[in-house]
Length: 312
Image (cartoon, rainbow, N blue to C red; front, side):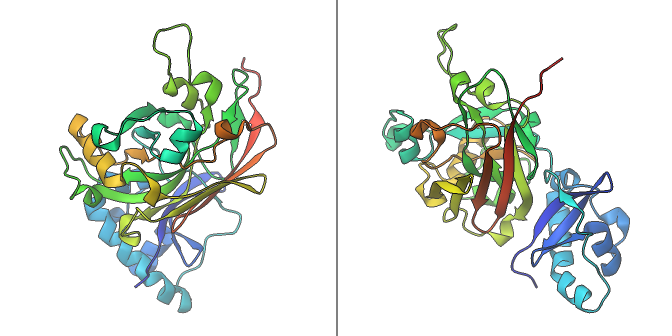
């Protein structure tokens, strides 16, 4: 039995395929399945397929991961070639972002919040096409001069659900990942309409959603409300928080969303960021900067910033 494993998508020789990570080592799911004697037809072809039928795939993948150390020791299984790179673990069906979900972050942004007892989560949508993998480049569009970072715990839904109670909400989670909610702060506000905020525009550019490096099953993280999270820019710590500081917990966010719509497998909830963002410091990303986002019990993603090439 292994206490921790993750599901990954890796690219090797121009081909993407699913893998399992055990003891910081990546294995191709197809190789693990063959070594375990699992028929190929029973294995998901990618992580989106795994999430689409999570109740069936989750125990199969957990059992396969548990057998990896013994298979490796017996010489029946080899790690993936070191030339492989991590791709985005999967493609979210939808991305929901929870705004101002840490009091200190709301303060640094100058946001005046109602009392918690009189409030509910404030959730916006971010384009799923913004997602990129660790190790890839975040492209700074010419429209912005205030590009910012936000480390967040990403929650991945594993079953269709509606009207989920707070008490039952964690049971619908397939797993967790690291998410960096890149934001063009000067595009989050508008003066040409009476609606002063436009988070969709400011957060939905291509490459504005670094995610990964993998998906850690919920069974490996029984308490998502006590995870440290940090973000460094060029090696300097900018954010250092804990999910225990959330205003609305992961379970409360799921319950709230499920009262509005049916959550679907593969939906991603970016659950909010602690203080330390660039906007609060008057410091913004520039080409050449490197961001390192980390969440305890999950892992680290690293992305550099570059100017977006001139659009044709």
